[in-house]
Image (cartoon, rainbow, N blue to C red; front, side, top):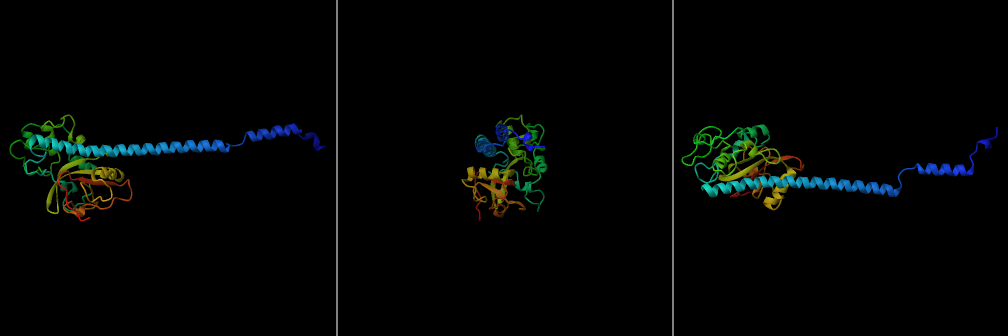
Length: 270
């Protein structure tokens, strides 16, 4: 049998070659376009993520500054800070109580325990409410019962409600919640023997805390100085400057606790 009878004509070979070349992959130009589009999409996603993080950090900053503004607004109207029942310039609620029982870590790691500090029902703003129960507020005359005014986290918010500084429509627990789904507390802390009014912010990611620190302190580099400070995990309480951590966690997603001194600021050795 002759092989030549099965051979393709030269024209047929040429067409087959062109057909095979037409089934090849992307050209370099096409690959370059695909890579460029993928790069642009990645940049857009990263930029969007950065914008979202900046927006959340700005919201946390606004939460803290709004609380500070409301405290000042109440003080201008009443001549005392909300929660300062004895009018001595010190908010009665002790922030040290957030650390739990004596000797417990000031870790603020239990969201449920912190939520339980705030009332979740309506608010009794009658005269009797100023004297008894979790919904107490400081009466215009006299002093609220001394046995619970230092342990009642609701006191400052109820004072704001009773004065008409804030609406009575939102419960205390929702009012005190910040953008990172935890809570702010307003009270006082004794540091190295001196008493300071402060706002604590529980469980925010490190990247968010750093951005807020830049806005309030002018820098994130020294987290144990300035008005906003990083509370050291594992500190038994905040009675000394040892409770302020000079270094941010290496992992920016690690949650941390902050304290903001909105009037006088403690000295620091760090």
